[in-house]
Length: 391
Image (cartoon, rainbow, N blue to C red):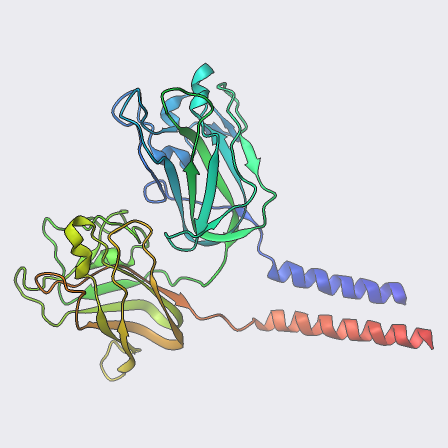
């Protein structure tokens, strides 16, 4: 009987773990938008751009070849000029719990493998500002400069939550021309943190299009959150939204932006990245005062104000942090920004970089509650049985 009770409890624990534990997996990174480097060699000797670090080129069955066109290499004193602050930043697309990562260092044949990264600091964060460092990871091993290179697995650190990961590079493996490179990097983990609402669309009272390409679609494309480059098509790392102001017709002196979440949602958090143009202090065009309203019927009869808010002026620098607002699980499909002012910018412009919505924390699924209940009952029953046996 004792063995039977132990088996029941063990089975319930196993069922609970199976129902609640997500399996770790390879995190897919978009080569077009998910990696950026301080510099790259792209005008000679085969392009060696940062997309090659995450696109699987040169990698077959986990083994990397020696073809340099399938690797990333930053500029150096011999070609392109010295890069004073070499780095690579990876954008995982959403917040993940990272359990480990695998690095294939720069693997060009023979002595050229000395261009690979040696001393490095690995920084991470949920936003482009990062803020934390992976302890115990200080260098990457030199590649052999031969085909069939298996790379190295980096693990043993406590799992961490991040969307953005930066390799801040200090030294290479002895190359005198100050080149630094990598062949491939893969991260292993699972999604975590607040769940971002995807498929959001946006419209505005105006957008500065034409040759400026500061269109409202840039607000909801989930890339370029901290970009300092205002012009760009949705889906590119660059690009912000800017209204017409009094710069062009039709003038827009009562600017609004409407977001459609696609369905009624319980909104937990709102993240807003303000307008971050770097040139001549033009980040002052960013939104200052606004009212946030929500609706379930596109503001026909259901119009609810969440109040007046102020956005922090952007810095005009990379690493921009968002303003984060807790909306407390408010139910809505549509969200409106009714904008009253900027931070002193010109031409009555108002603009933003990116807006993201996150679901409120979900109530536990009935199955999970049932498993917990069964587990508790089983433990209570087992405890009662043991007490009875002791009498």
